[in-house]
Length: 329
Image 1 (cartoon, helix red, strand yellow):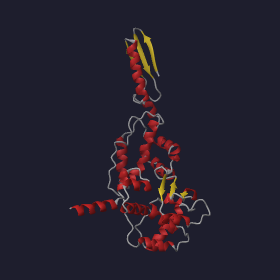
Image 2 (cartoon, rainbow, N blue to C red; image 1 turned 180 degrees about the vertical axis):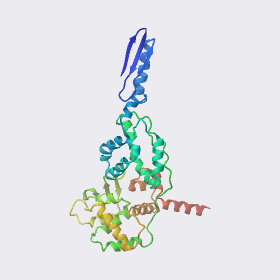
Image 3 (cartoon, helix red, strand yellow; image 1 turned 135 degrees about the vertical axis):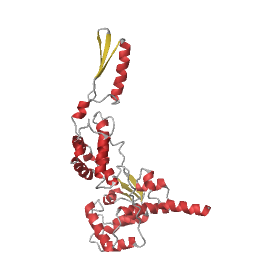
Image 4 (cartoon, rainbow, N blue to C red; image 1 turned 120 degrees about the vertical axis):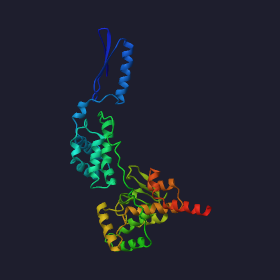
């Protein structure tokens, strides 16, 4: 709040706001004092006043990470993985620095040291929650942080995206090997991944109540990006789902780790060593493009909200473009 009082022949204005350095100014005219006070209050509301260094001197980066881990990260779907990342980060020397001393240069030193042992892509994943931490601290916790120190940090690296697709005969080999699994649902999960492009976690979470038999639609209530979606399902996919014994509402009553172990054993039996389960999603999306579906149509099924990310799957689009160019030229 602004306080205006007359001292001698001048009007003095004082602006005090928690987390910011108190400022004061004197004016000969009351009108000028009131105008300046309103301007400073607007800046205070926008967190544009000079920060009070004493507030940032009292908090270390480690304390900020702990608060973020226990109050923000804990509410995320990926909180278990992120907790491991944050706990490991807390052991780093940079966490002993006080926020008043922390600069981009400190993170640059940290980056250079970490890149001696991990890849740039791994470092990006490691620093993603730290970047968001500063956003939350400024916008929600009211800390007078003027600039996110990670905004100007360069994290360049080679593109390590996978473009692995199923090779001829591999899907049949997987299906045959799945018939010998003690869990009869493994083969069904693989087929669903190829037919729908769903992620492992989305498939394992399917419930009977999610299936709309009449409209041939499947609800995916919880996804990686936090947005639910409803995907169309073909007659063959619907028949596949209906073949699963409906003893429980959840069609695939197994943990992600149990399926991961089954998948690894399945690959060893088939001799396919370089195939990730997520590659089946890549295969499905590529097939959608090869069938002639447009980018928005594929996004409806895959759940991608960033079209730039979706285009990396579009081998079929590139093939059709090349075919059109060949025919025209």
